[in-house]
Length: 244
Image (cartoon, helix red, strand yellow):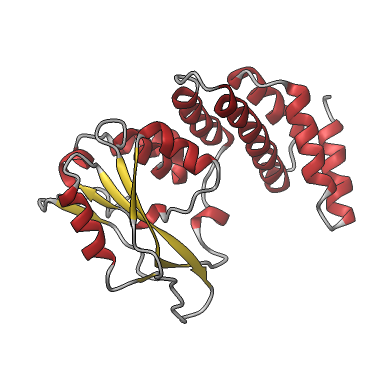
């Protein structure tokens, strides 16, 4: 939060994790793309993950692809590669956003709706080359962070508003399946952390996002069945059955 609150007066802004590794060509490519396509709000890059200090970035393809907000939402839903924490922003676009409001609503996943919002006017671009090696460690926010179920619901609602605005049955159907699986996995994760009823999460999600409770429950069972540890599997099935 401290980094985001700094008074930045440069034309472009980038916040980079001090334990990740940046390819030496990253800034050059991102800035040249922003200057070529003057309406873009930001340029990001693909990435790989590392657990050591070895840098093994794949740099065969440095082509940047331009996205509209709608196609960015589809790209992210379909697991498109983007290093959320290493985006180069146009500062004027970034300053027009109420960052505190985004962090309050979405918590540690605020970067996704932020990038989607910024891409609404003028679009964005993503470099296909893996220009960041992202370090994975047990203490990172995605594992230990203060993420709550209301933040997950807000994130999926953000995608819903974008996808359902377009008249594409295939994309809408994909969104519904993606949302169902995402909610199922999030419910399991929170249940394992809080030892609460999974069904409570599923019912709340179904009501707020208008996704069938039966569909979410089936997706949850499918995920639980794949868990290799019998004790955890039995415990989760019990917690799914409670209040059901």
